[in-house]
Length: 201
Ligand code: ADP
Image 1: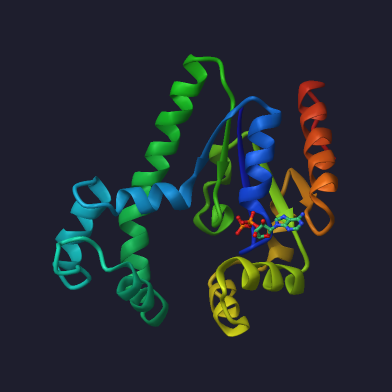
Image 2: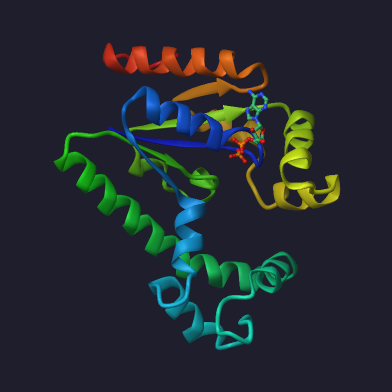
């Protein structure tokens, strides 16, 4: 089985997907991390990026100037769209190929996909789990984790579907606003229902 874990910035996707992968004895992938790997020099994403953007966003040593590119993505939706058009198909294919491998070795796969519904990948997965946390708590956790200001966090959130909308597409919702223990218990409940062959509620 393959399970996607999504949610808002700082809602706890990474936390929940890792707990879930351990609970299911599953493999784990993080699509943000796959995007970053694609953009390393010599990888397919980086090569395709060079074809489109040339050396506009490179450092003197030929590697990617991530800070400059991040600023451009925020400032110019054209850059964002072109970058996504390069990376999304590559990452989607990587996830599919890895899931094929998991199936051959009899393992499940848990995949963290921040923009699951925005990019329309939900049908690729047997289960879509949304991690929910009220906005103010997301903001304070992200501020602690990344040192971002509220306006920076709001800018990122504005590019995503509101968490309230994501909840409508969920097969299962994990409320991560409580303690880690509470989250682990909800993950255990989800897994128990999966094993029983029931749609978790
Ligand atoms: P996301 O992957 O959605 O951006 P993370 O899983 O990285 O979110 O969680 C954001 C921050 O909140 C991290 O610093 C994480 O350790 C913290 N965090 C996650 N879940 C909880 C929780 N239940 N209680 C307290 N802190 C949490």
